[in-house]
Image (cartoon, rainbow, N blue to C red; front, side, top):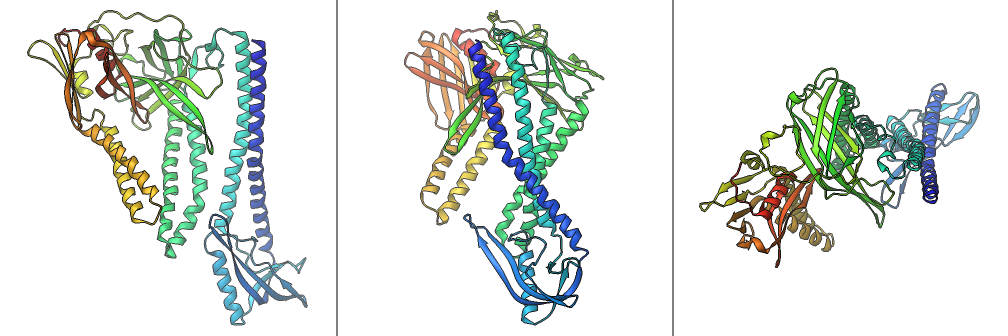
Length: 589
């Protein structure tokens, strides 16, 4: 144990050290850009007091520089002759900022002005330093676009650099505190995180608001030069440059998002989830109270969502990528009248935990499992929302399933440890029609497109891919690109058609389970005697955003058959799997 602790400490120290080394160049560039901007501003103020004198252009040119990415920058250069206090001087400084750039058309317009003066033998004005007359400049404008670009460079790189430095320092302190708790409670991992040790878990409202604000500010700062440059490009006839305006438009949306999260924080502060005991046991119940030091004027019920997420980190050719995968999800509502709403708002939480899901991962690694509880409520103005990270572990306290009881026996806000039989209106809300067969059996029809939002999203993706395929075939790109896009789009079209036009029907009658697929890619009904069924399970299906759907699969002695697809409610899917497995024939409640 001591050896493992020492190894972890050394690993954490090295990680923090490497992060600081990675951050230093960004911080240095940010400081350098800030000094560069400050120096430009000081020079501009100094040059504003220089003496104007006539000057003769001796030579003028517009230099072009193209980098490896094809971007072209310009620099107006000139040699000029002027006199000051009876002495003749030669100057080469044209503007306050030396070097080439492509910020607007300043360099080109300055070149055209100086070339016209040279060709027409017209004098121009030079500004001379009275104390050091050999110092002079032809244009003393402070270019707003270039100055803003320097400022953006300083803020972006400085924020990233110093943010990483402070983040590495903060993470090192957090890891040191966690290591002490590990040594103190080696067999109780739910006590290893300081934010869990007292059973009061702070919500993510404050952290989410800060992340939104920083991200929105950085995005808009990076997009600002684009907003300044593109209008000039469009005016010059470069219509394709209008595509770049998408980035400032996204920045406007991000700014609105950041403002909304900040208003939410100011209105509802940081909620706290109070757990009477730790940890949250797999197979047991999640019980606690969400406390908010403000009034939440919800217009309807509170919506709660419990999720088990696996975060996978993989090495790619260009670095490492991270993906979140929903392993399990449960949603329910807490009616407003069951909550205390006032200067202190409390929301009760009482929900059954699954048994066959992994616990929270505490060790370092590429694959981690976490549990999250989200709560939301629609309000006038900013809506209420927060998220809590939960310590979920297998403590051996799993609750055994009990016999089915009427739904009315359980309060609305409380989910039972066993799975209740869903009512007809609950099934209908999920797109499932229930009926009795003439011979006394049961039948469930899973209507087409159980989730409208997902089918619209997939359809939009398929239509966009089709349009992209036509565009690629019409251009001179290598044929492999439109072919690859077409193959991917064909899969998306098949998926969209399945969501729109596939219907499943399952019948349970006299010990025989009949599975039929109708509509798109229909197939003959499959009759499965009860004794042939090895298992019926609710299996994780597709994931659309942060919404998880479940498929019902029937495993028999000769293979596996899909009985339904894209169910949005885990409890309903689990109940159907158990009910079909038992072959129950009782009427619907």
